[in-house]
Image (spheres, rainbow, N blue to C red):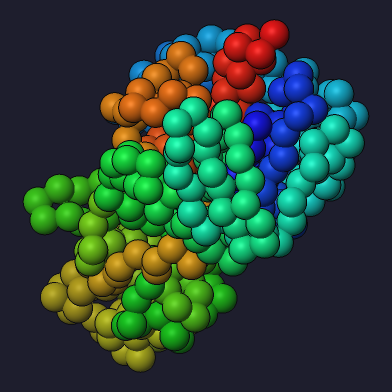
Length: 383
């Protein structure tokens, strides 16, 4: 039994296996991405009801109905307790309470390593099947197995090991890979933002403009040296596009603010600084003029600035992405077992599959649940 990839799903699969006759092969030391998840806080799952939880994965969510029926949030939270880890709920999301992401990843690795050897710093170069045997060629050795699990992750955050190499292994075995795209990724932009580096805005409306389509979310954003980040930006990045424009509503009531601006005795930017970070007020039209002297057109310019601060953006790419959209097609995978429909005893779990959830613990819940499903299937066959 061989598992390629010692991330969240691969380690979960190994943990739940009843056999010790297995190895895990990883490009690095394992669990690198898990160790930094959620800014080291690890949003493990959320408390949405079952059907709403499935909707969090879009059109492919129904594929997870069977695996979540066997291992869902209650089972996940109970499993964490075996490691001595509790959780706390914040705004409907469950976070690790008494452990960091790094501590949890180390605990998981050490528990697995007691029974199943983790072959560290050993990239997998190729896989093939000869009769009933899978032959796995790594940078150091050749291994043979009757059961093979590909749990290599996606293409996002390649420095953690999920560099997209797993898709090549899947195609070597005849599987189709749905087009890949970075999501949960910041936006890059070349204009307007250098001056705003380090500026943050809380609980504001941000609209993504895609042709005639408008997608609006509310939340926090952060201006960076390369563009924009923050929860609301990562959420909007789930939409597919190459280049787009975002509109930021800087204040909830721009018109009300502008009406009072006209009564202010001083420069327009000084009045706006009462409500906005000073760096943003420096971008306001007519900022140096006396507020009380602004005419109707100039006041309208300020209102437009407050209600529609527009920036051209593109996704920053896989190096800054947390999740990969696309992957091995679910049309070629059995949802009850996560076994390949075209090659017997070949299994997939985790981000390598074309399943992605939004921010809020969806992807970790899926990773652990899919790992459990694969292990359970193999356990039934070897018992």
